[in-house]
Length: 241
Image 1 (tube, one colour):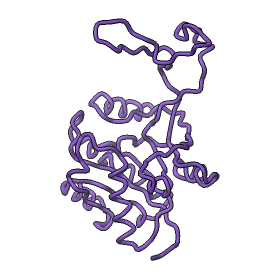
Image 2 (cartoon, rainbow, N blue to C red):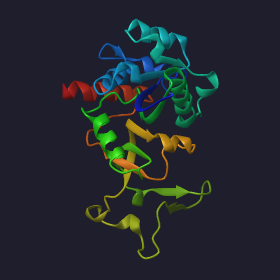
Image 3 (cartoon, one colour):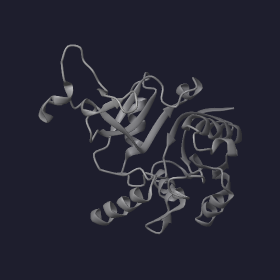
Image 4 (cartoon, rainbow, N blue to C red):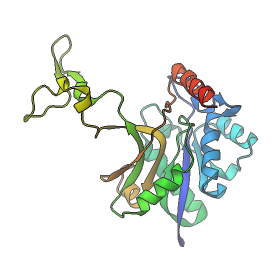
């Protein structure tokens, strides 16, 4: 086996989305969504290190028609394309297939979701620099400040009954009533632009691990899941162009 360490990028593009049919191949700027993530990866790593993982032979043909090498398209089992399948088994399938085909070991896996095509330059480089800077970091994940503060989120534990604060602090009463200016700014929402996972994290059966390092994203970028999200994407793009 080639012991030289490698980095690969995976673009997960399943076909069975329910909220927005075939969202991963919707045309944005004249290209299917998944191709924007593929082209983004090519700005940072070699095309031999970029893989599209899909369950669809239709998507495979679209990729080939757009110049993607057939060897860079991995067809995953249908069982890995169901609605409730999480990222880890999909990543595991692509990771194992790549190592087997290329007789190598992967050190880092970059995850680029097709549904977040508006990425600023250099996110791959920044993420890799972060994870390489500290061996204790299990993964890097894009995040942005929350728009709705957790202190003001309430949970209904029993239908038709009272609600309770999501976050409680025995040393401070009524966190929900703290003035906006005094709300702590230490809460973040995971966004979909990029994730980078260390090999050892994957080997432990996890896609994130216990030591996640944030890569802070400032620009607003919807994660496409509904028709409204896609309309917002086009609106943001038209206003930034």
